[in-house]
Length: 145
Image (cartoon, rainbow, N blue to C red; front, side, top):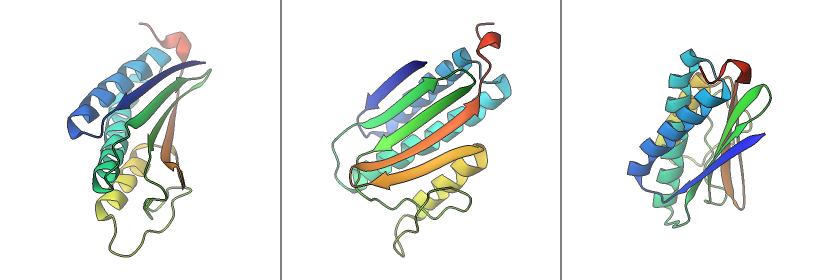
């Protein structure tokens, strides 16, 4: 199991870098070429959400992105360090908790976009922060072409 980990300061300009790295690692892991745009978009949404949460809560810790190549799957975890932050009530996102009223309309929209792009997505949070975990099928034997 190969793992790549990124940490970047909560600045919007770093989201593009995370998207590019995620697409490159997904390609190497054997994610279908047709799904690479979905990987880029989903990672962009998840990272933008984490950046927004950090900035709005004054968190100076970096955003975490962990890309893991497994035998038949490629997964990405995007983590923030905002304790119990609104995790959105996006329809179809397993593990999402309802938000306080008036909080995070952009957050809900981002989670809805992610859930529309990724079939396998989980959202969780605790007192240490939140994580969005996404995965795609991969065929490492077809990678490297």
